[in-house]
Structures are given as C-alpha cells and as structure tokens.
Amino acid sequence: MTIKYLSGFLLLMLFSNCKNATPQSNTYINTKTDVEVVKPFSKNLKIWDTFQGVSKYLNTTTVKSPISGVIQKVVISVGKEVKNNDVLFVIKPKELAALEHANLDKSLITILPIKIKAHQSNFITAVNFQVGDYVQEGDILATNVKKTSLVVIAYVPLDKEVKLNSSCLVKLPNGLVLNGIFKRKLAQNNLFNQKQPYVIRL
Image 1 (cartoon, rainbow, N blue to C red):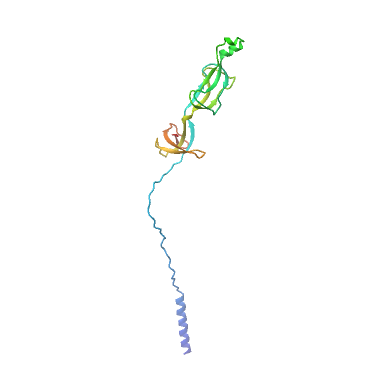
Image 2: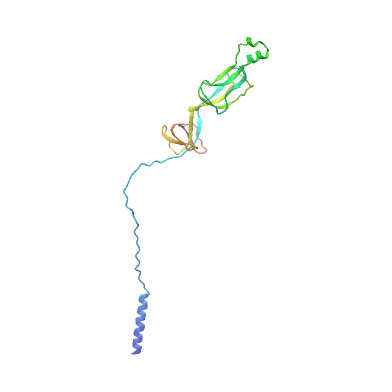
C-alpha cells in the first residue's frame, strides 16, 4: 500500500511540474495609436526664394572742362552730394594766366575765371584734378552718378523663373526692408556660377 501511494504521489508531482513548465501570459499589448481629432482649416502659404544682390548706380556722368587752363578751386570731394547749379570747379583760363604773368595792369584784363557748375543732383564718385593742375579742353574733371538711378542687381539661378514687373522684398544689411520690382534682365550672365542678373527698382 505504501508503494502504491508513493507512486501516485510521484505521478501527481510530475503532472504538476509539466503544467507549470508551460506558463501562459495574460499581458495585454495595446497596438492602437493615440489619435487627436481636430477641425480642418485652410490658409494661404507663401513660398520665398532668396537671392543675393548688390546695389549699383546705373546712370554715370562725367564733368568735362570747357576750356584749357589751371584749376583755381575745387569745391567737391568724393562722396559729396551736389545739387543743380552748385559750383564744382573754378578754372583760370590759360589766356588769363598768361596775362597775369605779363605784369599788365589788372584793370585792362577782362578775362575772368570760369565756374563749372552741376546740371542736376548727383553724387560725386571721382575727382581727377586738384588745385594747380593744368587741364585741357575736354578733360574729365570728375565723375558722378545720378542718385535716382540706384538699383539692386539680383543674381538668380538659371533654373529659377522670374517674371518681369513682379514684386519682391529687398533686405538691406542694416535690416531695413524695401519694396522692389523686377524691371529687366541684363544681357550678360555668369556662366561660372550659372546665375542671371536682374535689375530691381526700389
């Protein structure tokens, strides 16, 4: 009897161990993604292209000497703004210089120095002669630019399309933003960096 009970007990232990060897997982895995429901809305989107540019004066003019003589006075300097009818140079004609060296009575000399004046509002970009220099008729005394001819030259990649007379914004290095218009495309292009220059009027 003891052997019978012992065998039964061993069989019961064996079945119990086999049952525990195959554990069942009751863990639940949530495979759903959290979704938030919102109301749809629409708005206009603006896509900007940014191009590099440089400022430039398109209209450059020169001041020429109408006579031959000696520069007696220079009123202008590089970077100075001049207005219409401002005096730029005073030139002593060569005839006057010759008469002064002849020690004649000054009351007999009727030749007067010539004043060279500006014909419009400009910025002076170059002064080629100083006081005491001798100039001949037609010599370029100075170079100036028309201040209203300031434009921005924008360099646009060739794969970008720009419509003429379309508007744009020009941001200056100091942070100031100005309105501009693409007015025309310049004839030359830079084949090295594949960019086309456009003229932007401010």
